[in-house]
Image (cartoon, rainbow, N blue to C red):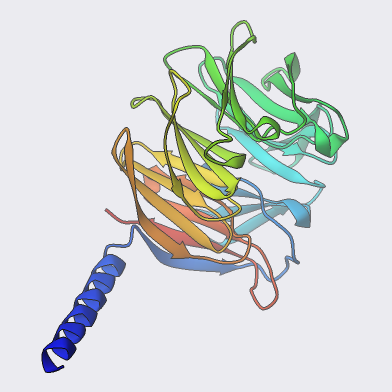
Length: 340
């Protein structure tokens, strides 16, 4: 009995020590929270940094606002409130303009970023949500239409924001599309088609569909997407159940998958740190890439209800998380330091 008790105590001590060590090695450290008591219940959507200008743009989707923070102080410095349901954004430093995708208005609204005054808009369909910017062609790809517009198909509008013109509309054979990423070494665009539980691959030059890769066997409702081009790996975040799904970006084969935070909305891949940041409700997961086929979850960080949108800013070694108002939780912007 004595020996058994001694072993039990030793195991408990060892477990505690491992827990402390894991906590000490957490990949993120909370530095600051900026309360936003003026916001009511409702989701945020995307966050976009302007590192040179020391600004962070945040869409408070259900509060009908775009919030601008100072990246040095993390204080709120301006609010744009002539939007209805702002989702994703593009900041063009060369044009000194911010482009805000508004779902309910069916527009890409344009703002001068010195005065924050409106500078026009580009018409798309209602339901406009996710977007992606291709720096090689300087074209902005905006997902619109689909189920939120009560249309049978979603579209990806290819927009030249410098001229305010739409070059093409790529029709998607689904009414639910969630995100796009681009390869730099070739013309492919990977489209997260949630309505098919699949990734569709398009040629950006011909705008033709090249391939469709199902992920349904690993998870359904893929909602976020990221890309490690060097390792030829696509990362998808699914909601049913919450998983990180890894695909070979050449063949579309599912390489592996791991349990992850529920209700994911944002995911980022950091090539320098070989990490994936996976934002879901109540938890922010961080995975480390051992090699192209193996990933470890090194952080399962408690956050808040529906705090599922964030952005990694590698230049500042910071991760910013938008936390919505819910019950006793005040809306806030949380700032984490990325630890080695």
